[in-house]
Image (tube, rainbow, N blue to C red):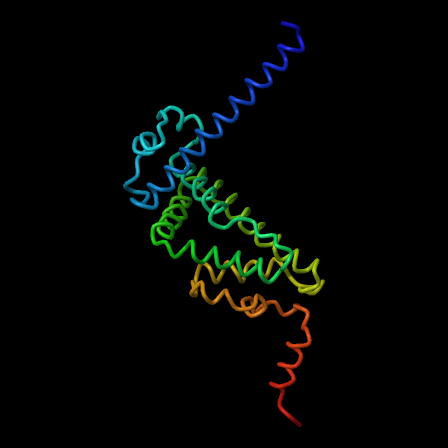
Amino acid sequence: MTGGEGEAAGTVQHGAGDEAVAGAREAILTAAHELLRAQGLQNLTIDAIAQAAGAGRQTIYRWWPSKGAMLAEAMGLQARIVVPRHDSGRFEADLTDFLTDSFRGLEDTGVARGLRDIAAAAQHDEHVAEVLANFTAQRRAALRAVLECGRAQGVLGPDANLDLLVDLAYGLLAVARPSPDRWCTPAREVLPGAGATRAGPTARRQSSARSPRG
């Protein structure tokens, strides 16, 4: 076998190995999320996760520093699946879909309980806190990307405070938890804090109609 052939074969083997590791890791995270959703953090064991995923305990301990860190990563993986990237080119539709998916995900009582358990664990486990912080940053960045598209399309004004709008949206998500059906209304009504949203002709007419006559 020539050197070039050997290098090519090595590249194929390495790639296949990477895919196998990624597949095993995803299987563990998926099993961890489903068990967390069904049982809660306190009743969940590494043995149960390993058995459900068809993996060894040592593999789990090698890849994650703690059970909580693994579960926080599992929640992040599921969030990306439940709330995928929306990029239809229509800002209001993409924002409505993003928020609707987010709220519907938390309607699952097992998911909501799992998030509460992970947040509590982060108070005394630095590994969980780090993974949870990364998860939060990723979800905020995903929503901000949608808002940036709105600004690029001219729907949000150039001075719109996107970070504030992200805070408003996730504040509602964490505290108010309104019905997902609410997010089927126009996105500019969904985020009342979007004061910098450019008013179109319809909005201007509505504003004039509400204004008191002199």
